[in-house]
Length: 466
Image 1 (cartoon, rainbow, N blue to C red):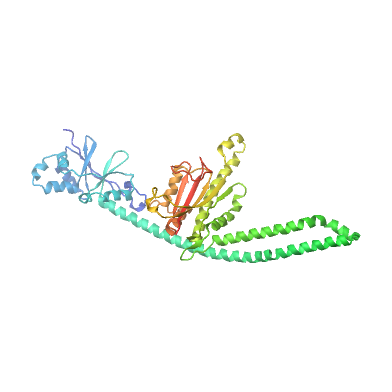
Image 2 (image 1 turned 180 degrees about the vertical axis):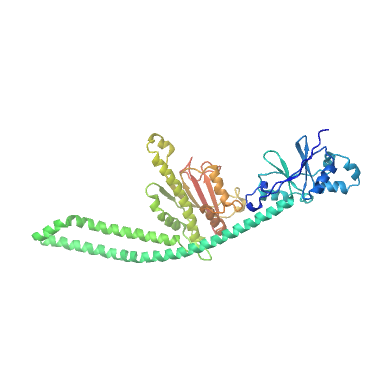
């Protein structure tokens, strides 16, 4: 028989003040109390009587973990059985074999929320049993199920509070955006008034200019002898150049006014204030408006290719959908500008440049109406979706970056400070009943864009077509 061993009970301190959604079992109060299987039950019962909060005892055989007997199982076995005197003379090994139950062993790195879910899945007679927590150094401790339940409900309360505060922030942000939209709409309206005045008068100015030039030509034709002073004045003002350049200048002013008018109209569309109910909108016009707002950032470094399909008017919240397009395009532009900056930095490596950057930085926007195959998705039988793909040929997402984006879409793992893509995901799924898919060249999902084969990323927005 091996040497008997009973450890002194030890309780690790809990860290309840720092509980969060990601807290693990290591932050809870854990009991260290172990006994060799060759010890007698009376020795363990004596320790349990002195320490009323001990949930049980860890059983060891030659220092190796064998199992666990809870306080309740041990006392029931010794008190309620008719063979009490006989059992007291037996070792813990015999008692354990007699009252053996399934033991739930969890690593100390497991999140409390996941551990609580696993504990609740046990059969009803085991719900009150303590949990064995295994450390990275192969030490075993006991966790009282009541401590786990209390921590579980505290974290749920924290999660509820975070959701409430996030909802309040979203409401405040929505109100700010609405106020900003009204302000921008007013400013845009004030800009459009003088632009409309300029635009309306440019046609008259153009006509007047042509008439005056015709009049001067007629004078030169029918009055060939021109006074010397007029000839000097024509040379001084460079009349021949003026006659050629004036129509071009008027045309340039007209083009600038037209561009300013489109830009202000795009700004008005982007700051559109959504009403209570969604309304039909032209997705292509919305995308064109967002692209126009990005022109100052795109310059000549980034090309945009549109592959628009035939889309009917889509019932949506136009203002919020504009925000989604802005967020995704902004992310794509940032990705490509970083690539362009690196490409500029490595200009001297012209021999390797073609190998590193086979394509000019570009964004592809593709819209189609899709009908999923019933075999791939039986629930979608008869449904139709509008697909908007925004893809770029910049650096692909690393597996960790892709996982971080997908985690931000999850309610359980969402960061306290939401990202623009997480907000976009909520708008697409919660507000429009759609889907937001993220793909990368080095992920399991293949890119839909034929333009990019071994690099790039794409975001696909799926909206139900009612």
